[in-house]
Structures are given as C-alpha cells and as structure tokens.
Amino acid sequence: MKYIFGPVPSRRFGRSLGIDLFPEKKHCTFNCVYCEVGTGKPEKEFIDFEPEKVINELKQWLFDNHNNLPDFITFAGSGEPTLYKSLGRLIEMIKEITEIPVVILTNGSLLFDKNVRENCKKCDYLVPSLDAGCRETFLKINRPHREFTDYDRYVKGLIEMRKEFKGHYLLEVLLVEGINTSEKEFYLLKEKIEKIKPDRVQINTVFRPPAEGFAQSANEQTINKFKAIVGNIAEPVKYYSASGNVVKHLKGKLLEEVILKTITIRPCTISELSDSLSVGEEKLNSILEKLKKAEKIELFDFNGEIHIKRKNG
Ligand code: SF4
Image 1 (cartoon, rainbow, N blue to C red):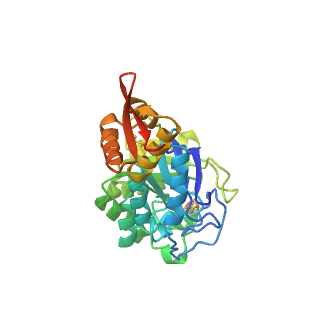
Image 2: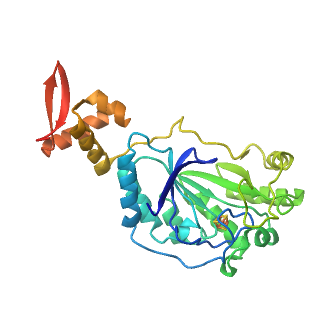
C-alpha cells in the first residue's frame, strides 16, 4: 500500500487509518520546528493525481479488514493534505463506500482559499492548527513558505472556515516551551480563539522527536496555565475512543461486495450477517433485496431459519 497506513493508535483519533497523500516526500506549506516528519523546504505548489489511486487501495484495505474497521480515516502523514487539489472529490468517494468518519489534520494555512475550504467541508472532523497569537511567533514556530507569511490572512481563513463548516471543528494549539508559552502569547491566542469559535481547542505539545532539537515539550504546569487562560473549551489532547457515536460501517457497492464474499464462504442468516458486519438488520434487508433482484443471492430455509447464499455459489 502506498497511500494507506495503520491503523495507528492516535492520541487524537483512536484507532485511526491514515491516508498519506505525499508518501514519497514531505510536501507542506510550513516547516514547523516541532515537525515529526523532519525539516524540509516549505512548498506552495498544489499537487494533483487521480483520486482512484487512493480509493482503490482504501477499498482493498476495508474489504480485507471489514471485521475490524478503524474508528476514523485520517488525512495525515508527510505534509499538508489541503495541498492535494482533488481532496474534496476523494472524500466524496470515501463517503460512497463507508460511514467511517473522515478527519483532516491541517495546518490551516490554505483556508483563506475558497476552493480549499470547499474541499475541507466534505470531512466530518476538521483539525486545523494555530500555534501563535501573533505574526512574530508564527514565523518563529511554523516557519511558513514566504507566500504564506500573512498571519492576519491565516487567522481570517480559520474564522471563515468555522463559519462555513457544519462538522466538528477542533482547533489544535501545539505548545513548544519557550517559543509560544509566554503569558502574553497565551492571551493573544485566546483572543484569536474567541474569534474563530472552534468546538474544542486541543492542547498538544512535542510528544515525538522534533525537527529541531531545541523544540522542547511544554510541561504540565504550562499546559494547565494555558488551559486556565483559554477556559473550558480547551483540553489537553486526549484519546478519542471508538465508543460513543462513532459509526463505522461500510456502505454502497463495497458493503455489497463484502456481503457476497461472506456468503460465498458460508451461507448465513440475516442476524449472523448483521453481527459480523455490524450493520443493522433493516439496512441489511434492503441491500439483500437489491442483491436478490439482481439474482446474485438466494434465500433458503434451513432448520426453520432463512439463510442467504450466493446464487450458483
Ligand atoms: S504543518 Fe505539520 S507537516 Fe507541516 S511542517 Fe508543520 S508539523 Fe510538519
């Protein structure tokens, strides 16, 4: 697999299946001091390729692992996913084959661009970053490409996206001791956060080896101070679990393929299929009806229970 990785236990998003759109080389508008992918010249070019390249891999992965689906599908990895032009179309295609929520982790630098916002609107959870309360700190910590150094435009993009986006908007602030951890910086950040109005603020720090050795983790006291200033909306990054309302089904053609594969191996009852695929019986019934009309399956009685088998299988 070239684009799909994991699932990895993510501090932010439970058991997360990753999509890395730039697996060959880091491709990002920033060059953050804390980047775990390493340092690299910041970029400004959008990249495009057929979304089928990713969707075919994802289909195969979900087909092979339909009994053990991840909690989230997350765009992450070696760069800035919004630099991929067909991101919106790709998410639409993901939504045709599964109900697993889609997450975009983004540095937010391109949200001033209407097309990028349109792409991002297709996801369920958007996690943009804001590490600095002013331009000076922004340049120091995120080290953006020279075309993305306009801090006010950056914050405006974050505000605009919030207004337009109907999904979960979680703003991430990553604290690097001594760089964005002064009290003054915290109040400047608070001011921007109040304008952006995210659903939550996730406070992160340097958990993995950073690009620059001087980028040190913020200690607990610093994190608590930031939380106290920003208020209840902020919380240290915590593990999102699969419990709660996370839906993780396959759907559409891919679900049909998995049903056909399952009953080819062994005829099943509807309740067995429902348990094995975690799909409600009502939904299954309508799919089975469709497959029956297409003469792909047949129903038969065995020991007083209706079973489904592959036609001519
Ligand atoms: S935005 Fe993310 S990928 Fe880009 S340099 Fe910063 S940490 Fe690395």
